[in-house]
Length: 311
Image 1 (cartoon, rainbow, N blue to C red):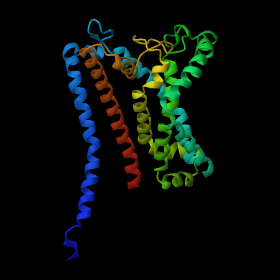
Image 2: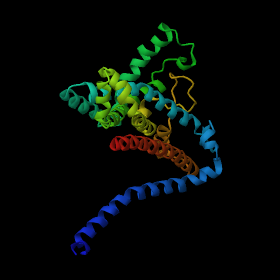
Image 3: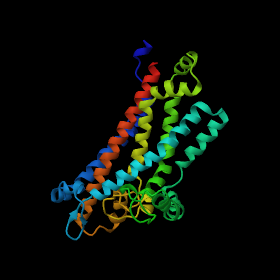
Image 4: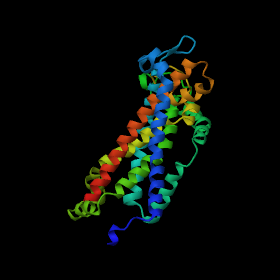
């Protein structure tokens, strides 16, 4: 009979409040997307596909080609992944498999602390430390000493502010995200996987390589893609070190633009309604890209955790 009693009014009110708070997040996302789509529609009608494939950004003549910014965004983000992923994987393996417990705790704390540093601080560090180091030492060394200046990837003068500088700064910024997710994914691997490999005579490294990493592959890829989503949307740090030149980069030494830096530099000084609409359209492209990347990353991480729970 007690099972059929009506629920207390406090439980009903609590459930309604929690449900309303939870629905705020998707509602905000839908509202944000609707506002951006509404504001971007005039530019989409005028420019059409040129917003994505055009290479000329000329506000005076209503030419809004954002392909150089999109190319700079993808190039700097992929470079950051190439630089950050090996370091993040090493940190994750060390902190979850190899290091003593005290070292694991301290290492995890310092890695997570990197995520708490404001992006403008990373930008200042990049501008005052990374850019001069690249201009005075790294770029001349790569071009002259290693004689790689003839390769398109390393051609051009050593300005310092460049895609390479943005990639280095972004790599440091996304490292804690990739390392944290990878550490949690490795921790979700069932203990039986490790014990089975060790029982068959595998060394500790062979156990990690052949039993742990393959089981966690999808989750590790998800963590990397979460880092990619973070890199795609970074604004201030990249704006300060990438050079902000609206041309398609052909070398890592070239100054470039990203979508985020384009918005940061021009949004507050938009000279007309069509210019503002074009910026909103570019923001919509960036929003769609980051949402897709993050959704796929979350699904991959969930897949690993779900597989571990079933095992």
